Length: 165
Ligand code: HEC
Image (cartoon, rainbow, N blue to C red; front, side, top):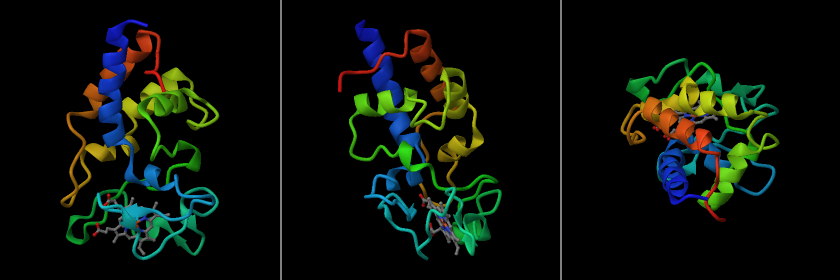
């Protein structure tokens, strides 16, 4: 493996770690992962919400009760039409860059995405893109989603190697 691959993978990893929705972290909690968290301090979501069958919350209190299609600044409520908790299989908290790299390539854990779908999800999907314009006083991910997408594409074109575990 050439060193440049490692550098590209590490750069993508740094941005990617920051970009992964905060809700992805939560799923690393012991099964069954249920709750979402809020803020960079990762306090538990208040009021307590649960994952529900499909990540969109309980039937009686789905995420979109409060989360609209856009960020709602007066109340600091983030928004997106598809706002929901990421699948538990995408949890990455506490894992190394190499482990996360293998994980995002694994269709069993990445939402069934092949490389083309993965690149689209990371580089163009507006749900992931929320991380670059999170609203309120949340710190956005550095750079732009488009630039991140280009780095990921370069990584894929170079063989999608992963750093050692
Ligand atoms: C009863 C209303 C309500 C429901 C239902 C709700 N949320 Fe929230 N959520 C909020 C509010 C209000 C905030 C903003 C809190 C703040 O930052 O001041 C928030 C913030 C968040 C954040 C924090 C973003 C950040 O980094 O600060 C995440 C993640 C989140 N919600 C996920 C979810 C998910 C996933 C669901 C469904 C499983 C859900 N919420 C359901 C009211 C709700």
